[in-house]
Image (tube, rainbow, N blue to C red; front, side):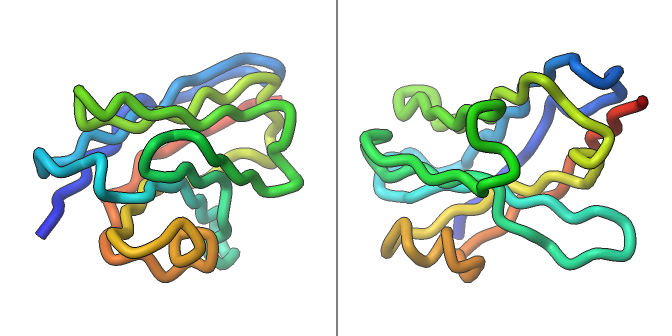
Length: 124
């Protein structure tokens, strides 16, 4: 079992930045592909970004490419999502996710584990 604890959400003005973090409970963190999803009110959860076990491969939703960067620090069991040039449409609850099998499972939205959400609100 892996516990994922997200943090770093908050209220920011459009054009601003936030950095989300997700800490994992397992010392074998480097065995897991990681990702971030988000869910806005009245909408389905959607993929945001994913990163491979080593950090060598990353994937992004088209809506965040060039603005968001996913990274990981395996020595600290942590994955980050740096969000720049935020827009009101980025407002959502953001969830981190982990999968021991493949990055593709994270990308497909079927990871083994989900973290609790952290709220991001972008004002116009």
